[in-house]
Amino acid sequence: MTEALHIQLDGQPHNVPAHSTLATLIAALGHAPEAVGTAVNGAFVARAARGDHLLHDGDAVLLFQPIVGG
Image (cartoon, rainbow, N blue to C red; front, side):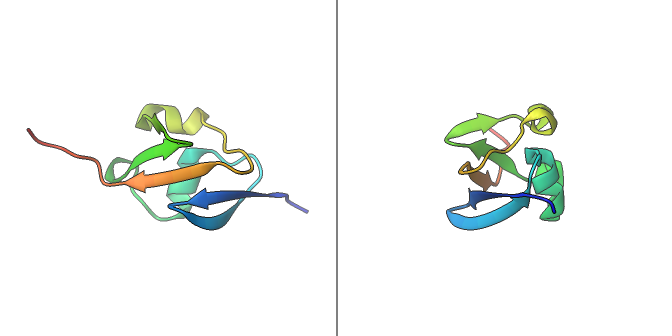
């Protein structure tokens, strides 16, 4: 049996499989990696770091629209 992690996703309870990374969460939600910005527990996580960022029980994940332009 696969253990689940209990996280908060955009302020709502959400379960993900154990050993999930931020990148796998974004893919499972159907988002293109470049289409969302990410923060975990209030800290920005760069797109290049998402594959190495393991999620932990109780993490608070925020997805947001990246700001582009000037």
